[in-house]
Length: 300
Image (cartoon, rainbow, N blue to C red; front, side):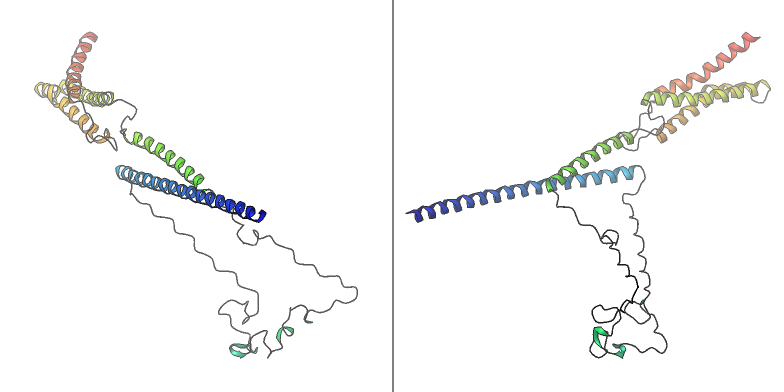
């Protein structure tokens, strides 16, 4: 009876282990599906980030792809100090004149360690076969070779344990979020024009038109002085003062805003405010001339 109970308990234990195994397998399968979905999501994000970076690169005039730096050429191993023709000698070394080539090699007899040339006993440096000379009386023992660590000898260190894929995916997601943040900052910077980037569009346009109007006023004063000495007639002075110079200032400001007031990305045509430019340019020159006349009369 106790045997039947033991078999029943064993069967229940095996059934519980089977159910636990099935649950573990289902949990592992669900975990793998979640990891696969996370990998696909990160892959789509990285592809979108790459496309957006290519667009920003084309907008600022940079090629979309970069050429990888070629790896440094691997230097040849140092030549061995062994005698020419030995296995330790570098390839292509000529044998010593008068020395016979080892048998078993091209042009020789049996190779080293074979029965024909005495085997291991005849090879110098083999311990236990009488190849090393015995120490005499009063001779100190030779120093043993110092052990060299595996890392110092050029052998790669042992790899760390396997990392958790979920942890790696979480780190990749964080780096993707950081890349999105930097990408948004780059887009905000790319939407600002090169000319006075910290100014508003209207303030930028007003400053440009005022600058060209100031240049027109200086040219107007030069024409006034030229008119005073009789080089330029009064009609020419009035024509340039009322129409020519203001039009040149307006066109110059319009072109500068269209060339350097355009952001790298975003709007195709930046706001140029032509009405503001017309008022500033066509009023600045006549008003400056009137101010010049008032100042001249006041000084007289």
